[in-house]
Length: 305
Length: 305
Image (cartoon, rainbow over all chains, first blue to last red; front, side):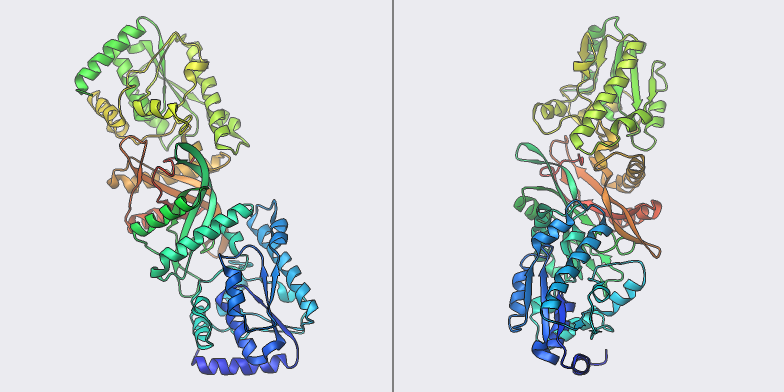
């Protein structure tokens, strides 16, 4: 990218041309990509843009409140409370691919309902360069909610950031005046916490992943990780008080990366790991063990499923 | 313990008195406790003692060969190949308590068969002080094969080391001239690798746990851990070559302890963790991720189930 200002100017002009008088819709995930794409499109066409945030229940702590605040100035913002429907759709599903498939399908259903209501004929997406590369291969299938264009019928799709890397997106976000919470926010997968709880998705596992992730984000801020989060791996024995318990194993993941295509596990100080361990097992009764993921990508992925 | 020599002398005298002319039997696990108790009893009554090693298939790499070598001088040594029967008994069982129960039951069955064949009326056990304390509480149920005395009918039980701590057992082992491999060997749970593979026990998981544990023991020798091993936690996504894979997550556990009743996770150097990660994921195609357990006991246990 030559220059942020001229990129923004060109992108806005392009969006204006492509959208014309049509109503456009964009799915907000809470992540920097979709937020920045929405901000760009809003600069271009104002309230012709309908930003839709589907609260899947698979989001980070306080994500929905954050969205509400960041996009408070957009009167067309739609927030759909779909938590119960997602849990139902995921009930009993153990296989990672099936989980993603169920989430994608439910997401499309929710999104389509809004698209019809507002009579949107155009779709704006926050696709960035690494997404396109990875979806060409077999590495990653649905980390960003793919499938929307194929299933919902739009006259056109606009992807203003399709040649940008993540750090360039952050520059654009800062330039557009998006809140730091958004512009500096770590990447978050489309299927959300569902890919951070192994096996069946349950409310309890989601709650544990959400609370533990808040502790991890808080403690690891100083390391400026590309991504840092907690995942729920399964259950192992522990001792709490005088009782033997069967509690969750929490994995802490913290990686450095430029674009997410490869990543390095970060060396963390022992006392920081101990603080995380102690806060997470102390705060969450049902957690008895914390492990630190020391694997790079490859051979691991950043996310767990 | 006042003095190793006088302990040994007294223990031998006590065993001689208690066993008289009876045939006694002892279950060898490959660990230091049962090996030392067997060595003591052999000093006392020679071939009135029948040491039985049940190869459950849940043992560490080369454990059976080690037993064969250590006890080569005891003509009464019996090695029972029960691998297939244990796998059958464990098939389909997910719950940790049920797993232990199935292992305990099968073990008793195997052991009882030999006890009848050799007409043993006395049982020697390598119980040590912390075992007695822990089995009084609810913390640990069957890490040492409990239940033998209740189910198999013996005229008496001899537990010559019931007041010793682990480090004292090691002193006795060294004094008795047991091989260093035995006297310095890390504790190993009665149900073996079964409590180090979460969920159902399968040959594949056991193989992975066994090979990964061999790498961990090799790399962590210099840290002189109380216990160091690998556990198989579940599957997560990874990338090997150009393919997305769903591979095993290996947990590395390494703790310091005096008696196993409490333990501290050991701070390990980052390059050692990286060497383990790289060796384990490189050597085992089906492993895509390595995590390091940073939890003390409490709130975790040393073992996983």
